[in-house]
Length: 387
Image (cartoon, rainbow, N blue to C red; front, side, top):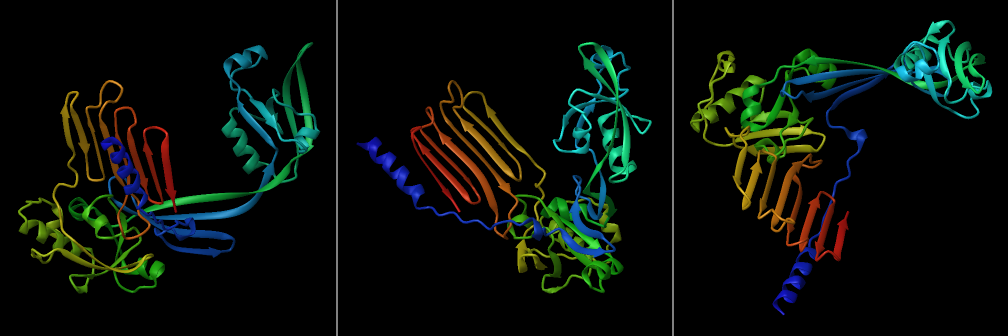
């Protein structure tokens, strides 16, 4: 009776949980500062941070154009295939497939043919073939292709002459411009702040003053829990206009000093004033998610990682964004396992993906992530919730 009651309670408890989700749209990328079209070129300015946390302003120019199309999929000519045809390795490309009802197919080209030259230009690799067709052949132009083909009588030399097709393609160039950031702010709050000079602010944000933006936020950090998200603009600090990145750095270092974190940084030398306060940082934000007031503390352990390993009995591994532990995880997984990690949130509330299993042998499992929850009891009792 007790086991039956336990299973019933376990089944009823999760069924009372509701799950909601905010749908993410690619068109509402919060890191895009500006997008404009001019003379057939679309230019996008996007803010982000690299792996080291340095903020970057990425400019991408995209332009649609008509390019030649042959309807062929090709691969490099390997050494073994080349020897069978009496050729030098990588002195051509092998046709893997031909799209039906294209001019190449109508001319008689088929899979297995080895293309040696196009209009006298040697083909050496699949990459070179694609670049040559896209950039050196005019749409609907007539081309002459010299090829080799395996036949019962031996190796045939074939020449194809046909008009290529055309299709729309997109040329894109990307330039990354470094922006001023702060290592201190990142390591103590999890916030990758980026400063835009007045001329750049005027160009991208129609603002005349220096602007500080959120380039990225470390999952699980104080900034993440306070609701800061990529694309936010920091307007105020502790109730006063922010002014620039130096004010934020001074405020973060002041809090760190009050907490006795003893942060050594070259950024101190550039500060005209030092700000001290024991109160949390209060930031006024405006961004894709609207106005927001974020309150957060500084921490000196954001880069630390914890590990506990008691052979056979218990194991735990954790960092800022994730936690994993297992208990009695041996011989047919007789024990319990738990995994949890913060995920990118499309709201100002934290979002997690978690999984828990209590064994023996799949007795109870729970998996949750934004918009989805799954529950399983005794292998055969299972239900999901989606939203």
